[in-house]
Length: 406
Ligand code: AMP
Image (cartoon, rainbow, N blue to C red):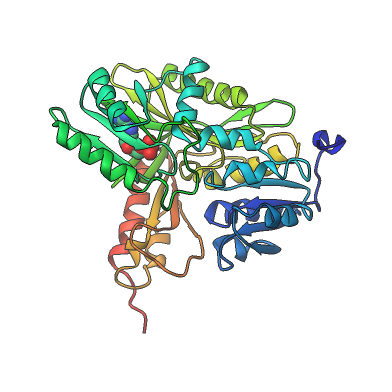
């Protein structure tokens, strides 16, 4: 049991702990340091993006409760930057330090079967689906839902990994092949195996959506919520490419998404920040796709475009401080910078930054592998269309005319 400190405000210069040292941990650390906190990071690699911005990196395995507890003893509150930390070892921390959001939030959202069960139980609209425990289950699910459909691994999928679309008219052999392919990784390389009786895959009916949007929201210790404007998200090869706000949808759709996001955080009892991703169907229905119990790539534009960034909001929420205003200062668009942009050498940052309203964030990763998120550009403009044009132009100037070193 955590004592009275559970309800107390954690003021600077307290020490905030983060599980995970990637870019989300780095941007959290930047926000926290600016506010006067100390930040300690737990990572499985020493040279992680957050290492450049924090006071101490604890290097260890996320599955090692003793290492986690040792880190937790030196911090005043613990949060995480990615959901693939096994919830079990995190439970060992519950008596040591407040963990926000609580491990049970992670447990629900890190497995698609649990997440969907939560959504259905609480009455949130989502894609029609079936939980799949066996090859026979998969065939039965296809018969029940019809095709096209998408099969997803229950745990550890991200950026389209661990997914396969089954086209209309797919044969029984193709369904078997999809089962073989997606279950080959289960148990090997998968940190969080399905619990006894849990599904290994889910089958989802294909949604012919009008667009994808997401809502980042924060919930404080006192249960108050602060919700950012929905961003409209464009993916390329299953990886987020561009996010923009305003999303250019009817007010009723945007309001529904915001209300659903706030309700998801409330029902999950999140203290911290979470992102709810949605499909907007052609007839204007809003369906939850998935939940990330942490800041999200689609919320990076809040750093340049809003009175409070999603990372400052995470600091405020986990420290029991009042949540900040989510007011947007200008229409904005964000473009991810993947490792591919480094193909011809160092990108031409001066060219990108000469585009009006454009700012750059790089994550400090040394190796620009294709598909790896290295940083992002954000453009603020008078209209969202102009912001999208400018951020796209800035990125193509940077990446096309890369400056060769030497
Ligand atoms: P996810 O990992 O579940 O976010 O899926 C990655 C991407 O695949 C989504 O952003 C969508 O573009 C697409 N996708 C996922 N599920 C569906 C679905 N049921 N219907 C249509 N597209 C989907």
